[in-house]
Length: 202
Image 1 (cartoon, helix red, strand yellow):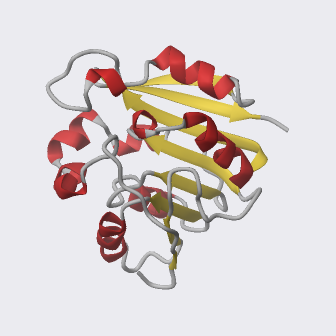
Image 2 (cartoon, one colour):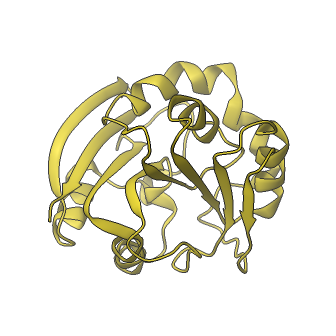
Image 3 (cartoon, one colour):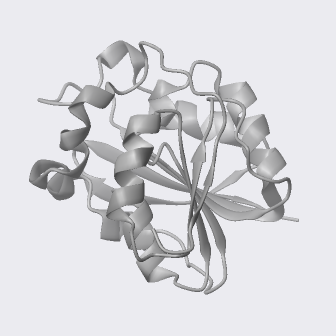
C-alpha cells in the first residue's frame, strides 16, 4: 500500500463483534445502498491535512474514500480483526496516506492529542464498555475534535445486529455529552441508520 504504515496491537474478538467470516457483506451493493459512504463523509468538513481515524474500519469501506478525499491528510484505519485489516491493506495499495492500526477495543495504539476527526460507523453497538472507549477517543484527540457516529436505528429491520444490542440515538447523544462532546447536527442516511456529528471544543 505504497508508503502507508501498519501499527500492531493485541487483538480481541468477542460475541458482540461483527463476524469476520462475513466480511464480504461489508462492501456489498446492498450496504452501499443503505449506508452511503459519500453522505457519511460529507457530514463534516475535512481539512486538507487532517488526521482522521476510521474506528472499526473493517475492510476499508470508508477508509479508502476518505484517503482519496483528503490526499494530504492521514487516515488511521483501526480495527481489532487482523484478517479484515489484511484485506484493507491489499485494497489500499497505492494510497500512501493510510496507517493501519490493529487494536483492542479500549487500547488503540495511536499517539495522544493527534486526531482532528474520528468516524465510528456501525460500531458503537459493538462496544462492551463505551465509557472506557470514549476515554480512549479523548486521549487520542486534539482539544478541538469531531466525531461522526453512524449506527443502527432501534427498530426491526431485515438486516443488522440483534435489537437488544442496538444503541438508541438518544443514548448515544447522552453518552457523548457525558464526555464533553456536544451534538453539532443530525443527518439522514436511510431508514436503517441514524447519523450524528459531535464536536468537542477547546
